[in-house]
Image (cartoon, rainbow, N blue to C red):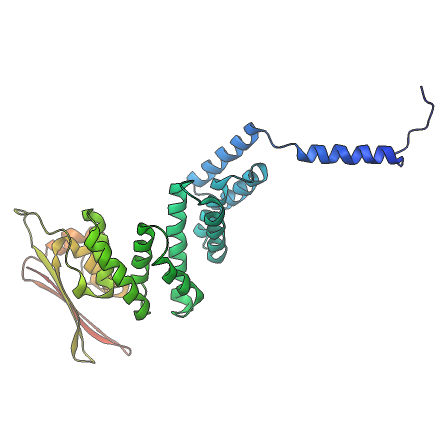
Amino acid sequence: MSDRVFSLTDPGWRIAAVLMVLLTAAVPASAAECTSQARQLKLSALDQMWGAVIEDAQKLLDCDPGAAQARFYNARALDRLRRRAEAAEAYEEFMRRDCRGAANEFLCEDARVSHTSLLKDRVTSEGCGSEAMDQLLKGLSTGDPYSRIFTAMELSKLPRCDDAKARALAVLLEAQRLEDDTDFRNEICLAIIRIDPAKCSGGTPRNAGDDGPSFIKVRVFDCNAERVKVSVNLPFSFARAVMESLGPEILDQVKAGGFDIENLWDSLRKLGPNQKFELKIDDDDRCEEVEVWFE
């Protein structure tokens, strides 16, 4: 046996130590550990503990860099925490890395919808000429059909941007023409109403034999311009769509006028045929008279 003195400064020992560190770092986490992290992430998401979701997502990515669900839930948590700029970037990273082919189909669809909603919110605050609007408009011609329709629906909710909404209207009209699902057609019609009430060809009429009114009619008169601003004549099934299209300010005043917004259908039916609900808004910016009635 050698009687050589052991020393940490020995070159051979330093090389061996470095190799041991590298080998240890290269050992992947066990499948059981990654499964446990994935389970914890799912539980945090179900409990809507969004701060914990962000932490759990990072732990899972440290364990398994290919974990698509971790990137998705990280974006979702940032979104729920209203950290919108970070959420948009996180959704984009998820879609770029994990939405190829049919992989993660449902998560990818959810991410596209959420990302589109974030873009719409950015346009509302940044203006019609923003980079976010450019991305939204691109969404009218790219992606799957549902994504294009949803993008058009989001554009219909903007208070301004008439040129962009006109492009969205073309997508919505084509979708309404081709769509067979009744409920989805109604949602498309709601979006069309927001842009141009005269262009919706109608959705699901009231069934024959049902009690109550058949049609809802809305008229908004601009007192300053002395002209009718909005005139709507639709099946009663679009009561919710028409009321939502009037905007939150008018809805608040409707509620103040004695209508139970939480039970809107019953409240509207109580008007009875040919009875009108009338409302006038008169302030420094505008003067409008709103009439709602049924026939």
